[in-house]
Length: 162
Image (cartoon, rainbow, N blue to C red; front, side, top):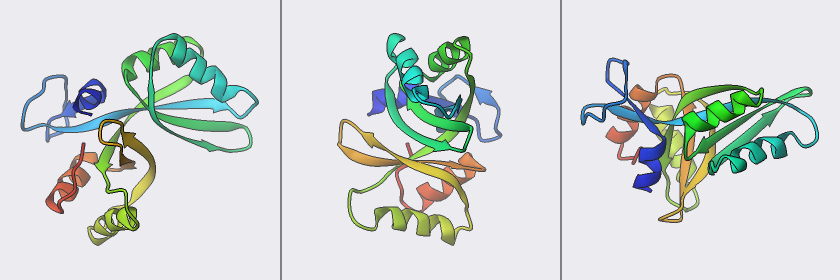
């Protein structure tokens, strides 16, 4: 799992400046790719085909659609490369910071996490499930307004944030 995380995380200093250095005092987030795609037959297949041909592994995904367009959000093993190959293929894409929180595989685990966020008056924009393949355990992927603040809050409440 650690190898997976080092491949897909970007670190930010507490004051929010982007850095590629791995300093201990930095907070870190996962890079997620958001792909805007027409809501038509075969659209998802075209995206996954581009990623497969470029040896990019999908680690987690969620799709939201409307009548004409959809947003495909993905964690992949090489976000910068995925962004590049998808943009080269004509897709509108965006890289976004998200948090990964380890969850127990038991009834009420997600409720426990969301209760901790609610107690701290934190709103979740969206979330979806991925898995730690080494441990075969769930990881909740979530987007929030202030990832550094939420990471600190969750760590203080005893959660393991990846």
